[in-house]
Image 1: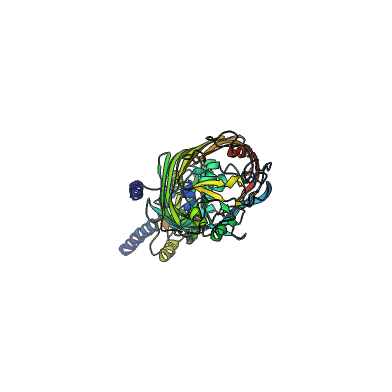
Image 2: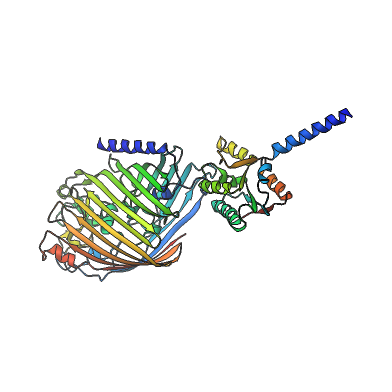
Length: 457
Length: 151
């Protein structure tokens, strides 16, 4: 009922704004969902490449049942087989445009991923369609986008990859917004004595069955409106809540809403200068198997709330840019792996397999402050401070991730650049003694060096 | 004699009427009496970059010569007619250039063809003036001393 009221409110607001006319200005909702009126191409080929190198010291687990084994945060995703690795983090190619150029009212957007990341993990190395949508621009003030596409939310993950100033996401975005759809809650330990059916889920360490990647399949109503120097944008969406290329896994639909207001200083496109304020929310349900019941041989599904929301601001003008966000999560909190080990690895006693875990009814919050300054037209220096408080409702489970990222970007030209990041990472269990195993493990988390070349075409 | 006078008068009225109806731009062209350069810009490509380019060229000409010293008409036909659709993303720039005396001609033949495909006539920018055929308009302007530029 509450969802319906929120949706109705957003729609009423949208239709009210529609009376005031529409604009075709550049922001992420509009840039990703529409083609410029009267200027769309029949089929614009585009894409980007991100060859990347990442490295840590590879410090092993200092304590716990997996002591001496690789520590999951010190390994390089997605295969977690090494602490230093070259990889093609993203390699995407797609087409977008207007199938019939003299009719700007129907747009399309198609993109496929060939890189090494969560979207392609477990897909056998084949390309995966990450985006495929059609936008209908027939109703003034209420454009409609249908299909699989990036959902409006936190600026950090919603923005186009082309303007991401860092190689890696903040801890909150990586863990709580880039959703891993897990088959079980992972609460029961996977031990050798467990039921065969449950062991099947343990073999791959509860590898995620689907990956969110800030995308969903559904329908979105949206538009942007210009008022003098201000541009206001809204989006309301219903979706499966299942991430990339997955059908609705239960009978529930997710609801999303987004609003932004930006004071535009000048320019256009992805790096338009302005000061933006925005807020977003995402409500849904998730159904997972009860691991305790599964271990006992019973297949029981439980349904939990999945709620995410946040507020933020971006400022970009001349040499300076400043971004800040506060986000929170309730339900289906991603909770790392057993013992901090790489998921799927067996403990030293040979009695348990480390799995990906959830805290289905817990909470998390996080924020970041991000500042960039161009010292020359080709060189930008960046610094970001981010915090993730995970499992805040359970003393023994609560973890605090604190990261300072130093960065530098060298712009070869408008289409390509080099990004170098050094992350100083801290992890602690604030409610446990300093010598408790989780805190010993937290002490072992390494700094991380990342070097990436980005090129869009 | 009376008959000759009658025919001469009738012919003169006919000529005036025909010339007034066939060229809506005639009066506007003369609104730049001090123009030293006369340029017709052709936009007939589907590529949206060409839309930006043709507007940039017009703008650069005005900046270089000054709005009173250069007389510019942009003739749109074929796929290039999209530039003159009312919702085109460049409509703001078109409005600005129009205020500086740039004229915009829309090809009637193209409008007819697009109307057949779309099932309805495309809505044009209110700055666009229809001409019977874009190519003919360009030839006529060239005959009047205009220089054709196709960016």
